[in-house]
Image (cartoon, rainbow, N blue to C red; front, side, top):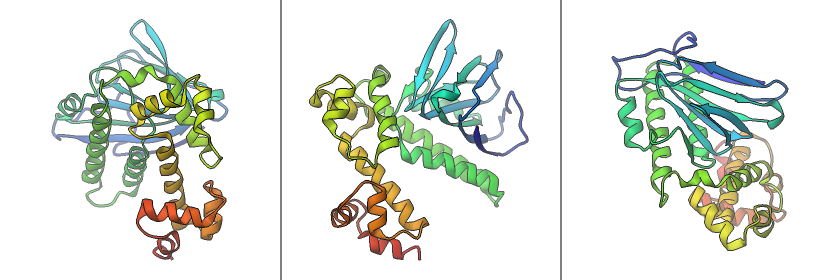
Length: 282
C-alpha cells in the first residue's frame, strides 16, 4: 500500500475535537491499495469529522444495517460519533484521499453546503479537489509559519467546491444512481491518452450516445470530450512544467499524434502556446 499523510497532531485513532477554533484540519492523506486489503472498524466513530474521497476502484461501507459499494467519484462523510465500518480490497486497486477536521463551525459549513443530507455523495472526479488534498498534505508536512491557517483555507475551499458540485445538479444526490458513469470516469482517468470514442464509452454503459452524454454531464457538469480534454491539458501542464520533455513529446504522452493540433487545443484552453508555457518554468 502507498500511504502519504500529513498531520497537525500526533495520531489519535479516535480523533481530536477542537471547540476553540472555527474550523481546523487534524490529519489528511492519500492511500493506494496494491497487495494488501484494508479495513476500519470504529464502533463509536471518532470525535472529529472525516471525509473520504475515492478516486479509483471502490470501497465497501456499512451504515447501520445497510452495506453498500462506493465507487470512484464518490465522497463519504462521517460526523462525530457515527460508527465507521469500511474496507478496500487490494484487487480493486482502490485510491482514496481522506481528511479529518474539527471546529465549532464544521457542522454549519457541512449543513450549508448540503454535505450532511446523506453519508455518500457522487461528485465525479474533481481535479481541483484532488489538488487541494495534496496542498493540505504538503502544508501539514512543511511546518511553515501560519500553515494551519492555510490548511483551514484549503479545507474551506474544498468543502465549497464539493457543495457547489452538489448544488449545480437539478436533483442533488441523484448522481449516486449512475454507477455506470462513475466507472467510465475512472476508466477515462486511467486511459485518457488513448483514442477514446464516445460511442464506444456509451456502448460500455449500454446507453445511446445522446443518453450517455446527458448522464455524463449530469454527474460531471461537462461533456465527455470536454472532460477528456481537461484531463489531457492538466497532465500536459504538469509535464511541461516538471519534465524535460519537448512539446512534441508531451503531445504524444497525453494522447495527441499531431503536435500542431495539440498546440491549438492547449492555447485555446490555457491561453498561451505550450512552448511559451514551458519557458515559464525553465
